[in-house]
Amino acid sequence: MIVGGKKDQKQERPLNNYYQNYVDGFKEWLIRLGYAKSTVKSNTYKLRYFFNELQSLQITSIYQIENTHIDSYHQKLMRLSLSTTYIRSCLLAIKNFNKFIQNTEHYTIGFNAVTIEQQIPNARDILTKKEVNSLFKSLDDSPIGLRDKTMLHLLYSCGLRCEEVTKVRVKDLDYHKQLLYVQPGKTRQGRYVPIHSKVIRVLKDYERYARPVINPNGYYFLVGSKTKNFTTKTVRRRLIRILEPTAITKIITPHCLRHSIATHLLEQGVKIEHIKQFLGHRNLQTTQRYVRVTLKEGLVK
Image (cartoon, rainbow, N blue to C red):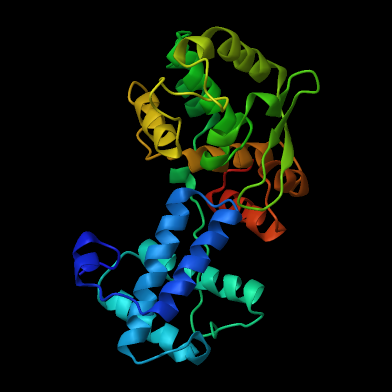
């Protein structure tokens, strides 16, 4: 049995109204904060499994949750031989629910028994500048090629999250001031990102020559066909297609490009405080993860 899998969903007992109301409220809270749909779905499902476990233990209120219950759940996940990453995501859902309770009921459930370590990227997750260049060189100047180049620049050159890329609007781009406004999302606050003049030329070419051909009526800057929206799933699928003709053998995701630009900025001597603002991190500790990987892998020279 895998927690969160289709088989597990069939075996899952329905939640009582008490726990289901908390799941629904948690889901709405994540949506209001601007979390990606996939994140909302994952956190909601995994919280349901934890609540299901509490029901089996006759725990009838969140105010009865103790450290031992979370630790016991942690041990159960480990016995199922699940990956460390997956177990971490299950515990992170509980941690996020704790934040929800802190904000809505000013109460904190016990969470001292389990330490969730942040996953630190390594060299396998980071593209070199040469590899980044090979991605751009694999694309032509056709409408789709210009669209994909624009997508890569938003991910890499602008350091946007996958969800942020899909939410960029035409009016968010100020070519004169060389700035891109990133709408409030995961960090609940918007930010301005500088755009290099070379990147602006690509964005303008896409807007003038490619976007009207692909879908002139699209609401967001990046558009799919007339019948499809440009979603986070589309971004991931297009990145896989872009990687195919290159010699890159690393398993690369959209977020890896964000890690890559942060690493390259560090290599160039950019102060970590500036990188924090560029990436839209709320805490400097989050940005320092990039420093740790560069020092660990010896990427900074």
